[in-house]
View 1: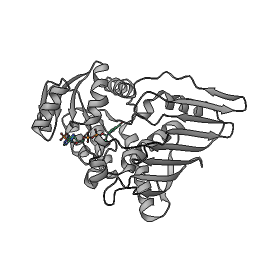
View 2: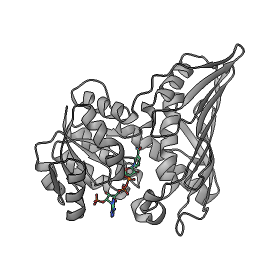
View 3: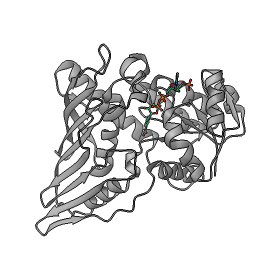
Length: 332
Ligand code: NDP
């Protein structure tokens, strides 16, 4: 396994990624927190031998890779510093707040010869891998429409910067729509070209911060995808559907961190559940990243994938702000 530094004493690392790294044989050497006491307590609680307030100190340890999961405005500088130190980067989504920053991050990693991955977990799920395969092999004929149901309830322990701090990259679009964007691209195997959307302030988000969104995206082939994301709905179901000329794929309970959900193929011969072998999404993400570091394949989602998911999310925000259709322009 790789030797890792964790950048950010975060919930996602504690709940999923520390375990995933260890499950792939990885070793966690140190964690960085902006607060010395919290860093110490976090290291102790998670069995990490060192903590530090200084990124330079973390990068000077004998490590191969960093997992960057700080709030979104910090990803850029931390990625640039890691690349400069010759350390591979697995970065959380959204990569940054501005597309030009995400481009700089990807370029810095490429120039330094280090692997960069974006931790879009959903494309690691058995449900989405099965849907991608079904679409690519023509099981639903020509795909015409997709629908993404990703309206959830932000749990109380996460009701912090996501709904309050615009400087940290708050709002449901940069938090959840980026995942829809990546999952749509992954399942459909094509690129979005334009978006229209309305955002909502449903009572959870602070001033000017959207906590709900609905929109429509047009893809290269003419396929239309609708999406619904929220922080405010405790009782909605999640799902992901693709409807084609010869059949429909209906995924239920699949927009989640957990290895659950099912997919039904419905066509002229009836309904069939697709066989799925559920696997921890984050373990698969780390395993593919580790293989890429060793020269085998690419991370599940690359830095470029992170640019593309951001480009769609930014188009969605711009459409909501301007009341117009906005072109998706990743600049790649
Ligand atoms: P957290 O809110 O848990 O952590 C973000 C930052 O807040 C930390 O870096 C930490 O600062 C600070 N912090 C954490 N706990 C406390 C506390 N008790 N008091 C004061 N400050 C605290 O963020 P998440 O783990 O929810 O998200 C982190 C990143 O991961 C984001 O970029 C997010 O978009 C992404 N994410 C991705 C997911 C995925 O499935 N791909 C899922 C969830 C999040 P410091 O490090 O300085 O101590």
